[in-house]
Image 1 (cartoon, rainbow, N blue to C red):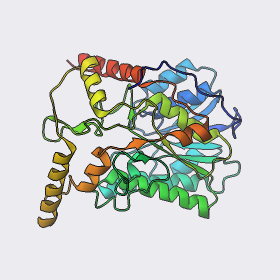
Image 2: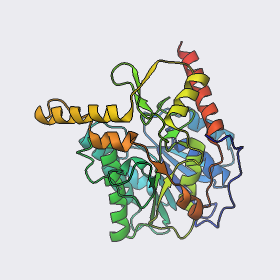
Image 3: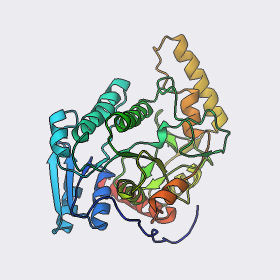
Length: 363
């Protein structure tokens, strides 16, 4: 893990949108969405429409509005499952940042909340005069490393998962189908698009203190499964900057960008720093070969039980999350003019401080 100081981002190429264009951000009240809004404001864009769920907590987004009194920030409540809500939200926008994400546990629920919602937004902008780009925020989870040698670099040219159902990964399934749908609308309806695939995003206000790529607490205690594997973390500010640039930089229609930071920590380093800076807890390290063997046995028993025991653990999922890969963000740097502005040391400090304070508040 590098101790490099923060470095300024490289010069930005000309943008495809004017500072007076109307931009739409979905999921604007979530974890990543507010940072996308802040980054757009920092780039000088003043007309931003924020689509939020009716049940969303607006404290953070409201504070952003209060800190930017000269900006025209419009907060719109709507349901992405409603075609009419999506049509109204997308009306007159120049660029749409589709940041909203769902965490459903079933394949049907994920399809509904990820794919159907994206289709409604695409229908809202298809054929709309003046529309310039649809930015779909996907996920690094769509890739498969089944054909890669252990330790081989995973980049945008690597194959995506061919059997997300067999992997028993609804999130991967939803994000794959979402990306396919966006690409389809690009080919058949002429919707200009860019897809970004961040790795695990961390920082203040993130859903998980310790990401599942590090380990799981399914059995009532924390199993550390990542070991010395590099984790493709991206600090929330860095991720938001890459997403914003993906909507603005010219000449990148149809491109896919993997987003992760430069100085990636190992799973072991992240866990050790979290315990030291935030709060300690007991964890048990399970070496990869042991967990792989456990996953194979679970998978076989699930098949023999005709699905009575769900295939929650299986060899494809185990390999995708814990086998150990190296990652490349060179394409994003080269074509977006992007560079992570917050290094891992500082990002971890902020992440840990937030969860340390959260723990104090709850105790």
